[in-house]
Length: 212
Image (tube, rainbow, N blue to C red):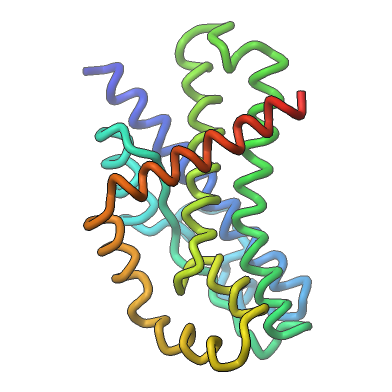
């Protein structure tokens, strides 16, 4: 029982760490592109209380871990004023992709450190191995989940930049229903969704091993 609590605690810490850097990346890139909305709202901060959402940052990842499903989640969206951004839709795409890219880099750096120190493979004990494994898997899960091209996820912002005008209107109108749609898809097609996440994660891990 104590072991389970320890591992759930580790998952929570990794989740909070990952979503904070994800959202900080959004706000930081927006600031560099001319929008100070996130900074003015106090979101350019490492304080997790500024970013975490009780449901998506805590409850969902823990439930997924308990049921041995791929762990993913999210945080409170960073406020961005599209009209202040240099490059407009391309600026917004850069802001959006910075979050998943940050999760990818966290996973990659964790893999390299874990691999070359042996900590990923149990050198040093079970707990360090678990920490490095989950740093990799959780961040890849966050990356893949947020790249789904359904509003308000980051993938939709990238799609918006390259989509024709009529499709941009569809995406904009769909915004208010997007998160509900995502929950319904996960609830109705959970096995398919989990399979895609597992396959995507496995493919990226193969790429990591190819690099070494």
